[in-house]
Image (cartoon, rainbow, N blue to C red):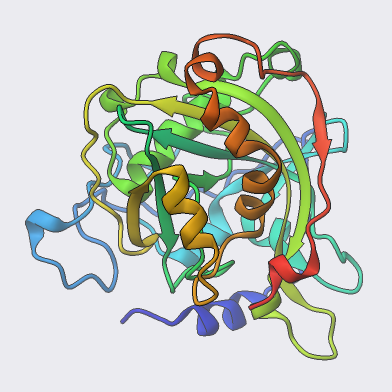
Length: 313
Protein backbone atom coordinates (compact mmCIF):
# COMPACT_ATOMS: atom_id res chain seq x y z
CA UNK A 1 0.00 0.00 0.00
CA UNK A 2 1.31 3.43 -0.95
CA UNK A 3 0.84 5.94 1.87
CA UNK A 4 -0.07 9.51 1.07
CA UNK A 5 2.52 12.24 1.64
CA UNK A 6 0.35 13.71 4.42
CA UNK A 7 0.28 10.38 6.29
CA UNK A 8 4.05 9.93 5.86
CA UNK A 9 4.71 13.43 7.17
CA UNK A 10 2.58 12.77 10.26
CA UNK A 11 4.27 9.44 10.96
CA UNK A 12 7.75 10.88 10.59
CA UNK A 13 6.82 14.04 12.43
CA UNK A 14 6.19 11.99 15.53
CA UNK A 15 9.79 10.79 15.55
CA UNK A 16 11.40 14.00 16.85
CA UNK A 17 13.89 12.76 19.42
CA UNK A 18 16.74 11.31 17.32
CA UNK A 19 20.06 12.86 18.37
CA UNK A 20 22.46 14.54 16.02
CA UNK A 21 25.64 12.65 15.22
CA UNK A 22 28.99 14.45 15.50
CA UNK A 23 31.92 13.65 13.23
CA UNK A 24 34.08 13.95 16.34
CA UNK A 25 32.64 10.69 17.66
CA UNK A 26 32.84 7.23 16.10
CA UNK A 27 29.80 6.57 13.97
CA UNK A 28 27.81 3.53 15.03
CA UNK A 29 26.18 2.49 11.79
CA UNK A 30 22.93 0.70 12.29
CA UNK A 31 22.91 -0.84 8.86
CA UNK A 32 19.72 -0.84 6.82
CA UNK A 33 18.19 -4.22 6.31
CA UNK A 34 19.34 -5.76 3.02
CA UNK A 35 16.88 -4.32 0.53
CA UNK A 36 16.96 -6.07 -2.78
CA UNK A 37 17.76 -3.73 -5.66
CA UNK A 38 14.93 -4.87 -7.88
CA UNK A 39 13.19 -3.11 -10.75
CA UNK A 40 10.03 -2.56 -8.71
CA UNK A 41 9.00 0.23 -6.37
CA UNK A 42 6.41 0.24 -3.60
CA UNK A 43 2.96 1.09 -4.84
CA UNK A 44 3.88 0.94 -8.50
CA UNK A 45 1.39 -0.72 -10.83
CA UNK A 46 3.50 -0.24 -13.96
CA UNK A 47 4.40 -3.31 -16.02
CA UNK A 48 7.88 -4.71 -15.39
CA UNK A 49 9.52 -3.16 -18.44
CA UNK A 50 8.48 0.30 -17.21
CA UNK A 51 9.81 -0.10 -13.67
CA UNK A 52 12.61 2.26 -12.82
CA UNK A 53 16.10 0.75 -12.74
CA UNK A 54 17.26 0.74 -9.13
CA UNK A 55 20.97 1.25 -8.43
CA UNK A 56 22.82 -2.04 -8.84
CA UNK A 57 24.42 -1.83 -5.41
CA UNK A 58 23.76 -3.38 -2.04
CA UNK A 59 23.29 -1.96 1.44
CA UNK A 60 25.16 -2.91 4.56
CA UNK A 61 28.80 -2.81 5.56
CA UNK A 62 30.03 -2.07 2.03
CA UNK A 63 28.81 1.54 2.32
CA UNK A 64 26.99 1.29 -0.98
CA UNK A 65 23.73 3.18 -1.43
CA UNK A 66 20.59 1.48 -2.74
CA UNK A 67 17.58 3.16 -4.29
CA UNK A 68 15.06 0.44 -3.40
CA UNK A 69 13.56 2.08 -0.31
CA UNK A 70 10.40 4.00 0.53
CA UNK A 71 10.17 7.73 1.20
CA UNK A 72 9.95 7.24 4.97
CA UNK A 73 12.96 4.88 4.93
CA UNK A 74 15.03 7.44 3.05
CA UNK A 75 14.09 10.10 5.61
CA UNK A 76 15.23 7.92 8.50
CA UNK A 77 18.31 6.28 6.97
CA UNK A 78 19.88 8.75 4.53
CA UNK A 79 22.53 10.74 6.40
CA UNK A 80 22.99 14.35 5.28
CA UNK A 81 26.19 16.38 5.71
CA UNK A 82 25.87 19.19 8.26
CA UNK A 83 27.82 22.41 7.66
CA UNK A 84 28.14 25.89 9.12
CA UNK A 85 27.55 29.10 7.17
CA UNK A 86 31.11 28.92 5.81
CA UNK A 87 30.30 25.45 4.38
CA UNK A 88 32.66 23.75 6.83
CA UNK A 89 31.54 20.23 7.74
CA UNK A 90 30.36 20.01 11.35
CA UNK A 91 28.77 16.56 11.48
CA UNK A 92 25.96 14.55 9.98
CA UNK A 93 22.33 13.76 10.78
CA UNK A 94 19.39 11.89 9.32
CA UNK A 95 17.49 13.46 6.48
CA UNK A 96 14.46 13.63 8.82
CA UNK A 97 16.33 15.58 11.49
CA UNK A 98 17.72 18.04 8.95
CA UNK A 99 14.30 18.91 7.54
CA UNK A 100 12.24 19.43 10.73
CA UNK A 101 11.42 23.07 11.48
CA UNK A 102 10.01 23.69 14.98
CA UNK A 103 10.11 26.23 17.81
CA UNK A 104 13.44 24.96 19.08
CA UNK A 105 14.97 24.74 15.61
CA UNK A 106 13.05 27.17 13.41
CA UNK A 107 15.40 26.71 10.47
CA UNK A 108 16.11 23.01 10.77
CA UNK A 109 19.75 21.98 10.31
CA UNK A 110 21.95 23.53 7.62
CA UNK A 111 23.16 20.77 5.32
CA UNK A 112 24.69 20.33 1.89
CA UNK A 113 22.59 19.83 -1.22
CA UNK A 114 22.97 20.01 -4.97
CA UNK A 115 20.83 21.13 -7.89
CA UNK A 116 21.44 19.70 -11.37
CA UNK A 117 20.40 21.58 -14.51
CA UNK A 118 20.58 19.14 -17.44
CA UNK A 119 20.35 20.49 -20.99
CA UNK A 120 20.00 18.56 -24.24
CA UNK A 121 21.83 19.27 -27.50
CA UNK A 122 19.18 21.88 -28.38
CA UNK A 123 19.91 23.74 -25.13
CA UNK A 124 16.52 22.77 -23.69
CA UNK A 125 16.38 22.28 -19.92
CA UNK A 126 14.96 19.09 -18.41
CA UNK A 127 12.45 19.85 -15.65
CA UNK A 128 10.80 17.43 -13.25
CA UNK A 129 7.64 17.61 -11.17
CA UNK A 130 8.25 16.10 -7.76
CA UNK A 131 5.95 13.22 -6.86
CA UNK A 132 2.79 13.97 -4.90
CA UNK A 133 3.99 11.38 -2.36
CA UNK A 134 7.18 13.33 -1.55
CA UNK A 135 7.32 14.31 2.11
CA UNK A 136 8.80 17.75 1.48
CA UNK A 137 7.57 20.06 -1.29
CA UNK A 138 5.33 17.50 -3.03
CA UNK A 139 3.99 18.12 -6.56
CA UNK A 140 6.21 21.14 -7.27
CA UNK A 141 8.00 21.69 -10.57
CA UNK A 142 11.74 22.17 -10.30
CA UNK A 143 15.08 21.69 -12.05
CA UNK A 144 16.28 18.33 -13.34
CA UNK A 145 17.37 16.87 -10.01
CA UNK A 146 17.63 18.30 -6.48
CA UNK A 147 18.95 16.19 -3.64
CA UNK A 148 21.69 15.73 -1.02
CA UNK A 149 25.19 14.31 -0.98
CA UNK A 150 25.33 11.74 1.80
CA UNK A 151 27.79 10.84 4.52
CA UNK A 152 29.39 7.41 4.73
CA UNK A 153 29.00 6.07 1.21
CA UNK A 154 31.27 4.86 -1.57
CA UNK A 155 32.10 6.60 -3.84
CA UNK A 156 32.56 9.46 -1.40
CA UNK A 157 30.08 12.35 -1.50
CA UNK A 158 31.60 14.58 1.21
CA UNK A 159 33.21 17.47 -0.68
CA UNK A 160 36.56 18.85 0.43
CA UNK A 161 35.99 22.54 1.06
CA UNK A 162 39.21 23.44 -0.77
CA UNK A 163 37.88 21.70 -3.89
CA UNK A 164 34.61 23.62 -3.73
CA UNK A 165 36.42 26.93 -3.30
CA UNK A 166 38.58 26.07 -6.33
CA UNK A 167 35.55 25.17 -8.45
CA UNK A 168 36.09 21.40 -8.36
CA UNK A 169 33.32 19.25 -6.87
CA UNK A 170 34.00 15.56 -7.63
CA UNK A 171 32.24 14.24 -4.52
CA UNK A 172 29.07 16.26 -5.20
CA UNK A 173 29.10 15.07 -8.81
CA UNK A 174 29.19 11.48 -7.50
CA UNK A 175 25.97 12.25 -5.61
CA UNK A 176 24.39 13.88 -8.67
CA UNK A 177 25.10 10.86 -10.86
CA UNK A 178 23.61 8.57 -8.21
CA UNK A 179 20.40 10.58 -7.92
CA UNK A 180 19.90 11.15 -11.66
CA UNK A 181 19.75 7.37 -11.93
CA UNK A 182 17.53 6.94 -8.88
CA UNK A 183 14.99 9.68 -9.70
CA UNK A 184 14.97 9.71 -13.49
CA UNK A 185 16.58 6.45 -14.56
CA UNK A 186 19.37 8.26 -16.38
CA UNK A 187 22.35 5.89 -16.55
CA UNK A 188 25.73 7.01 -15.27
CA UNK A 189 27.26 6.29 -18.69
CA UNK A 190 24.97 8.97 -20.19
CA UNK A 191 26.08 11.64 -17.69
CA UNK A 192 29.86 11.15 -17.23
CA UNK A 193 31.48 13.10 -14.42
CA UNK A 194 33.64 15.16 -16.76
CA UNK A 195 30.53 16.62 -18.43
CA UNK A 196 29.35 18.36 -15.23
CA UNK A 197 30.33 21.96 -14.56
CA UNK A 198 30.07 23.40 -11.05
CA UNK A 199 29.00 27.07 -10.97
CA UNK A 200 28.48 28.32 -7.42
CA UNK A 201 26.98 27.70 -3.98
CA UNK A 202 23.72 29.11 -2.65
CA UNK A 203 22.70 29.30 1.01
CA UNK A 204 18.95 29.51 1.47
CA UNK A 205 16.21 28.50 3.89
CA UNK A 206 12.59 27.74 2.97
CA UNK A 207 9.72 26.42 5.08
CA UNK A 208 7.28 24.08 3.34
CA UNK A 209 4.05 25.93 4.14
CA UNK A 210 1.93 23.04 2.88
CA UNK A 211 3.14 20.89 5.82
CA UNK A 212 2.81 23.47 8.62
CA UNK A 213 0.89 22.50 11.76
CA UNK A 214 -1.21 25.52 12.67
CA UNK A 215 -0.23 27.12 15.95
CA UNK A 216 2.64 24.76 16.67
CA UNK A 217 5.44 26.27 14.58
CA UNK A 218 6.18 22.79 13.24
CA UNK A 219 6.68 21.97 9.56
CA UNK A 220 9.07 20.40 7.12
CA UNK A 221 11.50 22.64 5.26
CA UNK A 222 14.87 23.05 3.55
CA UNK A 223 17.95 24.82 4.91
CA UNK A 224 20.66 24.12 2.40
CA UNK A 225 24.12 24.90 1.14
CA UNK A 226 23.21 24.18 -2.47
CA UNK A 227 25.91 23.28 -5.02
CA UNK A 228 24.81 24.20 -8.58
CA UNK A 229 25.82 21.80 -11.36
CA UNK A 230 25.23 22.26 -15.10
CA UNK A 231 25.52 19.51 -17.70
CA UNK A 232 24.70 19.25 -21.40
CA UNK A 233 24.37 15.90 -23.12
CA UNK A 234 25.23 15.58 -26.81
CA UNK A 235 23.11 12.44 -27.20
CA UNK A 236 19.57 11.96 -25.88
CA UNK A 237 19.41 10.45 -22.40
CA UNK A 238 16.96 7.70 -21.48
CA UNK A 239 14.53 9.15 -18.93
CA UNK A 240 12.67 6.43 -16.99
CA UNK A 241 11.14 8.25 -13.99
CA UNK A 242 10.88 6.57 -10.62
CA UNK A 243 7.19 7.03 -9.63
CA UNK A 244 8.17 7.36 -5.96
CA UNK A 245 10.14 10.48 -6.87
CA UNK A 246 8.77 12.04 -10.05
CA UNK A 247 5.23 12.64 -11.35
CA UNK A 248 6.14 14.36 -14.61
CA UNK A 249 9.05 15.71 -16.63
CA UNK A 250 9.65 17.73 -19.77
CA UNK A 251 12.29 19.61 -21.74
CA UNK A 252 11.66 23.33 -22.15
CA UNK A 253 13.14 26.32 -23.94
CA UNK A 254 13.68 29.56 -22.04
CA UNK A 255 10.46 31.03 -23.42
CA UNK A 256 8.52 27.87 -22.54
CA UNK A 257 9.86 28.00 -18.99
CA UNK A 258 8.83 31.64 -18.60
CA UNK A 259 5.35 30.76 -19.84
CA UNK A 260 5.07 27.86 -17.40
CA UNK A 261 6.11 30.07 -14.51
CA UNK A 262 3.35 32.54 -15.33
CA UNK A 263 0.79 29.74 -14.94
CA UNK A 264 -0.75 30.26 -11.50
CA UNK A 265 -1.96 26.67 -11.38
CA UNK A 266 1.60 25.30 -11.29
CA UNK A 267 3.62 24.99 -8.09
CA UNK A 268 7.39 25.57 -8.09
CA UNK A 269 10.11 24.70 -5.61
CA UNK A 270 11.35 27.79 -3.73
CA UNK A 271 14.99 27.06 -4.59
CA UNK A 272 14.21 26.83 -8.31
CA UNK A 273 12.22 30.06 -8.30
CA UNK A 274 15.06 32.03 -6.70
CA UNK A 275 17.71 30.39 -8.95
CA UNK A 276 15.61 31.13 -12.03
CA UNK A 277 15.18 34.73 -10.97
CA UNK A 278 18.79 35.44 -9.98
CA UNK A 279 21.09 33.13 -11.97
CA UNK A 280 19.62 30.67 -14.45
CA UNK A 281 19.06 32.83 -17.50
CA UNK A 282 22.58 34.27 -17.37
CA UNK A 283 23.99 30.75 -17.54
CA UNK A 284 21.44 29.72 -20.15
CA UNK A 285 22.12 32.73 -22.39
CA UNK A 286 25.84 31.89 -22.27
CA UNK A 287 25.63 28.11 -21.98
CA UNK A 288 28.70 27.30 -24.09
CA UNK A 289 30.85 29.56 -21.90
CA UNK A 290 29.21 28.40 -18.68
CA UNK A 291 29.99 24.77 -19.51
CA UNK A 292 33.47 25.15 -21.00
CA UNK A 293 35.09 28.06 -19.14
CA UNK A 294 35.36 29.32 -15.56
CA UNK A 295 33.65 32.60 -16.49
CA UNK A 296 30.69 32.11 -14.13
CA UNK A 297 32.42 29.90 -11.56
CA UNK A 298 33.09 31.61 -8.25
CA UNK A 299 34.22 30.60 -4.82
CA UNK A 300 31.40 32.53 -3.22
CA UNK A 301 28.48 31.47 -1.11
CA UNK A 302 25.45 33.51 -2.19
CA UNK A 303 23.05 34.15 0.71
CA UNK A 304 19.53 34.18 -0.70
CA UNK A 305 16.35 35.27 1.02
CA UNK A 306 13.36 33.19 -0.08
CA UNK A 307 10.17 35.30 -0.22
CA UNK A 308 7.35 33.89 1.88
CA UNK A 309 5.20 33.74 -1.26
CA UNK A 310 7.60 31.18 -2.72
CA UNK A 311 6.84 28.73 0.10
CA UNK A 312 3.06 29.00 0.01
CA UNK A 313 1.07 25.88 -0.72
